[in-house]
Length: 442
Image 1 (tube, rainbow, N blue to C red):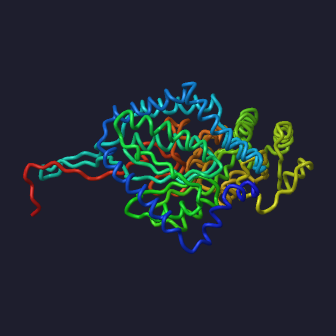
Image 2: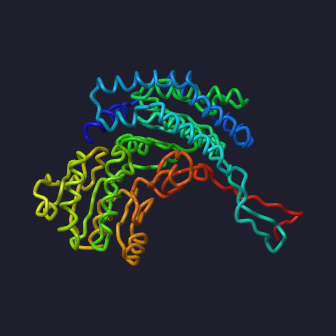
Image 3: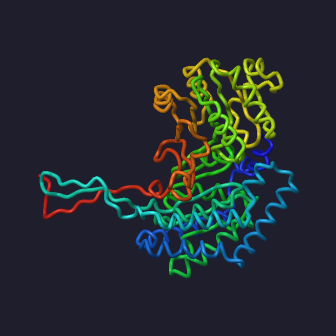
């Protein structure tokens, strides 16, 4: 995990040391942001039908042989370069596209097009004693900057959600996915122009220069929100240097607690899914907590199941007493987002100990309990502080698509202004509106 983060985000660490940004680069980024700001005003008034037609055009293109061939050819350049650089298998998985994945992206676009448009919806309406009718209207945020690594699908996800919610977006993808991002952005821009919307509604930063990120996040007055998605080093860099609001999601150290009253067959299915279905994502399981009451029965069995699936297990002293083959966990393991087939395992003394462990080592992302005891389940839900808490289900469900939001633009673990997966509503804010008949304040 450490090597993959170093590979992905070394450029941002170098950028931290830069005293000045090249004036020409800073000017170019500002000009792109100004164009995006102008486009955002057009988008804020665009009809739902016009925005939906853009999304449907992009979906249709991503199912066509011509566009698919162009995107996959571009993606192959990025994947081959990543393999030559010997990056981790988890990073390759995030980077690689296929016809199947492009079809899934197209399906997500159609789903987003079918979602209710939040822009202009008036909520919390009431009539004051003086007859003034008031409410809170959902409006776009304006210009949203996405700074992200590895995953080219974020290019489409972010563009789609920003467009549907009436926001312009500026996309700053990582250099490891530059060709893929450019090919996907070109498809989106063509659809925008075909429907009469400004091409600057979706802007991909056309350079891999590391200082472009620094220039972008300093544009207060032009950029309304920055959403970084990627390694912890990238997110900390953006947070430390931004002059505009930032949605943070440092890492996903996700836990599953197997209670002494759990259905152990269910627990096995959930743990295997949470850890092995796609280990390189933020909602994958990283730490397994097992109640001492069932550890002697359950732990050897689940250890064998996971080992057979090539998962490396790192256990505390009590886990290793029951499974001596486990590698000894270090203090750092409990705070590590592995993003690969490695799992930390601890035996705990019941629910209180599990809650204490999660409070100490959790990352406010996703936590799950496996139990038949409704009281314990409800206590876990109430007391665990995370953007999603699950009972008898895999951590992999903390995802915008799985939760019915369509594609997500990110998962916020900072609570302001959103907590958890961010869909269309989370990309709007609310302004007060009032309708009067001549009222004046006395």
